[in-house]
Length: 139
Image (cartoon, rainbow, N blue to C red; front, side, top):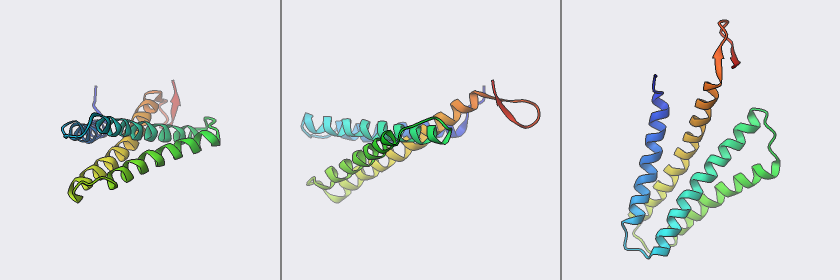
């Protein structure tokens, strides 16, 4: 079985970014409530990014998605990202530490988008097969 290099690299980038930020959060001297807040925030960013990409792809593929749900996906993604960026800004950390967490949040958001798309593309590719005429058809 051939391993899709982009699929592997996307997973590796996501797990690396998510893992580094998570390890950084849990290796601080913060209170438990602060660690919990940033851990939940990281999960919210990831989940909202996956939901947004899935909703956009569903609409693109002709699957009915209500405008309200699409709006909620956008709002959740914007809110999770915004709260992450603002909460880091409002800390008394040095700028270099703030920068690390900002980059971590941006990296997790982007790799969540990329991974969600790659998972969907891979799943879509498994449901297609060539018919010998260069055209693809569903199995």
